[in-house]
Image (cartoon, rainbow, N blue to C red; front, side, top):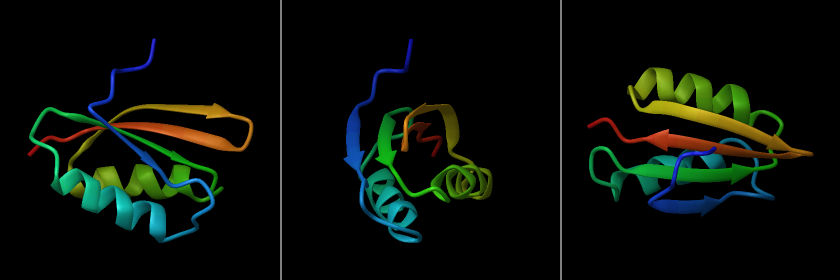
Length: 78
Protein backbone atom coordinates (compact mmCIF):
# COMPACT_ATOMS: atom_id res chain seq x y z
CA UNK A 1 0.00 0.00 0.00
CA UNK A 2 1.54 3.33 -1.02
CA UNK A 3 2.31 6.01 1.55
CA UNK A 4 -0.29 8.73 2.06
CA UNK A 5 0.94 11.96 0.45
CA UNK A 6 0.47 15.35 2.09
CA UNK A 7 0.97 17.04 -1.28
CA UNK A 8 0.77 15.85 -4.88
CA UNK A 9 2.83 17.23 -7.73
CA UNK A 10 2.02 16.45 -11.37
CA UNK A 11 5.09 16.63 -13.63
CA UNK A 12 3.66 14.52 -16.47
CA UNK A 13 4.74 15.99 -19.80
CA UNK A 14 7.76 17.74 -18.31
CA UNK A 15 11.32 16.66 -18.99
CA UNK A 16 14.61 16.88 -17.16
CA UNK A 17 15.41 18.99 -15.26
CA UNK A 18 11.86 20.32 -14.66
CA UNK A 19 10.48 17.43 -12.53
CA UNK A 20 13.43 17.72 -10.12
CA UNK A 21 13.26 21.54 -10.03
CA UNK A 22 9.51 21.43 -9.31
CA UNK A 23 10.03 18.68 -6.71
CA UNK A 24 12.68 20.80 -4.99
CA UNK A 25 10.33 23.80 -4.88
CA UNK A 26 7.45 21.67 -3.57
CA UNK A 27 9.65 20.14 -0.85
CA UNK A 28 10.56 23.62 0.41
CA UNK A 29 6.87 24.19 1.22
CA UNK A 30 6.55 20.98 3.26
CA UNK A 31 7.43 20.56 6.91
CA UNK A 32 9.79 17.85 8.08
CA UNK A 33 8.13 14.42 7.99
CA UNK A 34 5.56 15.32 5.34
CA UNK A 35 5.32 13.28 2.14
CA UNK A 36 5.27 14.49 -1.45
CA UNK A 37 3.84 12.35 -4.25
CA UNK A 38 5.32 13.31 -7.62
CA UNK A 39 4.17 11.82 -10.91
CA UNK A 40 6.32 11.98 -14.03
CA UNK A 41 6.52 10.31 -17.42
CA UNK A 42 10.11 11.42 -18.06
CA UNK A 43 12.12 8.18 -18.57
CA UNK A 44 15.07 9.79 -16.77
CA UNK A 45 13.02 10.70 -13.71
CA UNK A 46 13.66 7.42 -11.85
CA UNK A 47 17.45 7.85 -11.96
CA UNK A 48 17.09 11.59 -11.34
CA UNK A 49 14.93 11.12 -8.23
CA UNK A 50 17.24 8.45 -6.81
CA UNK A 51 20.31 10.68 -7.17
CA UNK A 52 18.46 13.83 -6.02
CA UNK A 53 17.17 12.19 -2.82
CA UNK A 54 20.61 10.69 -2.14
CA UNK A 55 22.16 14.15 -2.56
CA UNK A 56 19.59 16.05 -0.50
CA UNK A 57 19.04 13.43 2.20
CA UNK A 58 15.26 13.28 1.67
CA UNK A 59 13.82 9.78 1.94
CA UNK A 60 12.59 8.12 -1.26
CA UNK A 61 9.90 5.89 0.22
CA UNK A 62 8.51 4.24 -2.87
CA UNK A 63 8.55 4.24 -6.65
CA UNK A 64 5.53 2.91 -8.54
CA UNK A 65 5.34 2.52 -12.28
CA UNK A 66 2.15 2.36 -14.28
CA UNK A 67 2.95 2.12 -17.99
CA UNK A 68 5.09 5.17 -18.76
CA UNK A 69 4.13 7.08 -15.59
CA UNK A 70 6.19 6.92 -12.42
CA UNK A 71 4.88 7.82 -8.96
CA UNK A 72 7.48 8.82 -6.41
CA UNK A 73 6.83 9.18 -2.68
CA UNK A 74 9.40 11.33 -0.91
CA UNK A 75 9.50 12.17 2.80
CA UNK A 76 11.00 15.48 3.77
CA UNK A 77 13.73 14.83 6.34
CA UNK A 78 14.76 18.36 7.31
